[in-house]
Length: 107
Image (cartoon, rainbow, N blue to C red; front, side, top):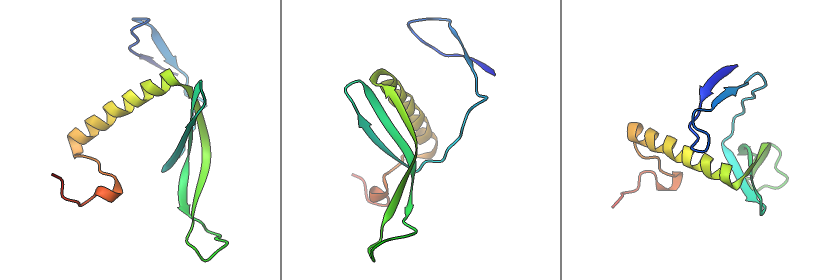
């Protein structure tokens, strides 16, 4: 079990104990987000070419392996944390561009 103090304006100085004994690690190269009035639902998985296409048309298979359900407040905090992480990454390694924008001239 590891110990970590996380900043929380509502409870300053609260020590959070992390129990990672049942931690699972997954690989995800794709996600799907949907929501209800009360919760945000994030499905995680991976996409790959369909190994058994039923037609001659090329198909992608999106295999959902895990689902995360959280409140909107937790989703907002996750969003802010991810934005900070991406900002630091881009400062060190350069801007991340979506696949359709790679190699295009920027104004």
